[in-house]
Length: 365
Ligand SMILES: *Cc1c(COP(=O)(O)O)cnc(C)c1O
Image: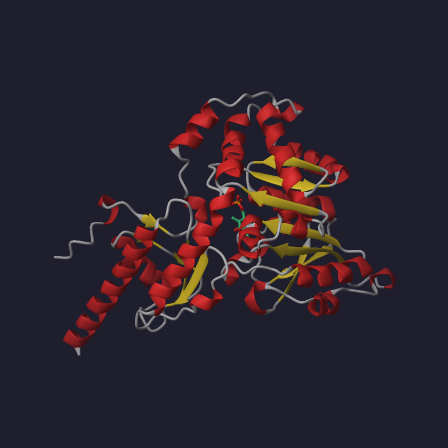
């Protein structure tokens, strides 16, 4: 009998996403005590404090609290783009794969996906994708917006360098493009590079940060930009039903996260490297620990299991949550509910699954 295969009975070590964090006891009691008011009217003091503190971290003029990062992306796209406009982004971007086609559905925008290693593209690739003679050409869509995802999720949490961003911004300026940063994991980029968030955010017309990912809050994201941009963003927040009432209850979780959890993101990065090192020693798994920059580890299971889906299902039965992101690619994300001991258990569990698999392969041959 396999004593490990007790599924739901055993507490799950959930590496599926850093969105899986549970609010801590201390965060919950901070939330319960939050001062609240009418958020729609700008009268929730906790939301207002969160906005001020986020603005000062990002160096932006104004910001708005929203229920999700997806809504931040989609409101920004709606403000920047008119129907028929084109968005230049990486072909692995969240706005393409995980937002239910919202750029098309809500903004009538076209997407021009471009490629490049590590989930990133170059200024030259942007230059080549821009419809530069659009003023004289009724045929092409209008290039309007460049979206950069910091860190690049599907590429394994890679960090865009300020240098590359600056070169892309220069191309954008030349062609009158707007710049948007999907900053779901911007603070992970900051922890990895040692740079302040302002060093990245200052190049963008709009930028947002997620509090429900590595920072460990249960709900919310903040979209930031110029006062004029945020005035426009508020129109769509209202129109799309994103305006709230006593939102300070949830915003308090974000505020608590800013004060207490920002400085611990480096620990997640260290554990991600430890995980990658442990997995790289297991026969049949392909992973390069040198490529782990933040809290995401991608590894290839083609020589270990039938598919990523099968691997994820087998590991779930053994109490480990992974994500299948491609035919043979598995994703693991470290976060504040994952300890060094958990990582050790994950590596041991995967290694023992490898042994039982080679044992059963030997028995059946
Ligand atoms: C999670 C994520 C989003 C969406 O954020 P939600 O708060 O889950 O809506 C957008 N972009 C990236 C890169 C993400 O990882």
